Image 1 (cartoon, rainbow, N blue to C red):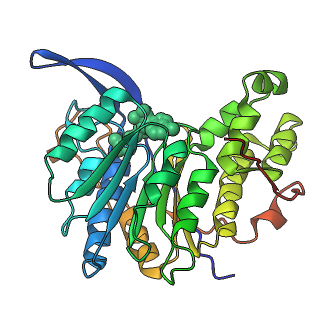
Image 2 (tube, helix red, strand yellow):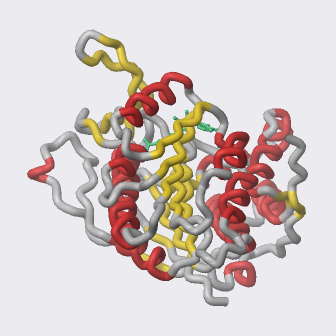
Length: 337
Ligand SMILES: C[S@@+](CC[C@H](N)C(=O)[O-])C[C@H]1O[C@@H](n2cnc3c(N)ncnc32)[C@H](O)[C@@H]1O
């Protein structure tokens, strides 16, 4: 059906949060494991190429739904690295407008402060829940403009209604839909839908997962099969990803890429790229495949070497036929708010 879907393997580590003393002020900064720096460096490469490829457009728009900190610290080396918003500010030609969402008040204030240093760009920093604030703020995004959205939650905070709004925004304009790069916490899904159904239900996890997919149905079958040991944890994890990709295909996206991010033991999350544009796909494939130094150890960069290009394989085509159990149809989630 003309969908391209592929999968990359790569090593990475855990995330920590800590207070640090910086000059005379105590500043809240998050310490990140090397996989986060690597994720941001892929994003920065992609955004730079996206800006060049769309330089003739009157407007170029960047949306960051989970913008985070303005100061990021790499846990292994103690060095700073730019966050997603800062990476987007660095591209040439610059984005003409940006929508930056952040729920945490202090972080939103820092993001606003950074935005004020770029008076030439139309930047809106929205403090609040991006799932609730997206509809109203999207109204200002021109439908003919190339738009890239980075959706980088900590866990399962990203709701599918937000993805639907983004996918629908330019529908009917004759232009490709908004491109997205989405963090899907596959390990979080396996953990939330753990081996104890009652406990998962008590904590409201099934509803949270339904909001993430925007639907009930096949993921419940996978969970049931996992509870009764008919599929392994890794089969379940991969199915959760492939079902998410199915949902994006259901929105009409033509090109999908998926890149698992692992720590030294197992997969943490998968970055899922969705685009209508073959050029977008080839740029993201290039960014994902590029050799990169990953600062896994506290050694100076001089002694670290780029890691070899990650292995790719097609995992999406025909996966349902090979999956050990039959999967039911999607039942759309009924949004109440
Ligand atoms: C993984 S961090 C983002 C990292 C950031 N993109 C970067 O590159 O440094 C996720 C951020 O999303 C924020 N957040 C969580 N839920 C949110 C929501 N519903 N809407 C907006 N921001 C949210 C958190 O406060 C956190 O700062």
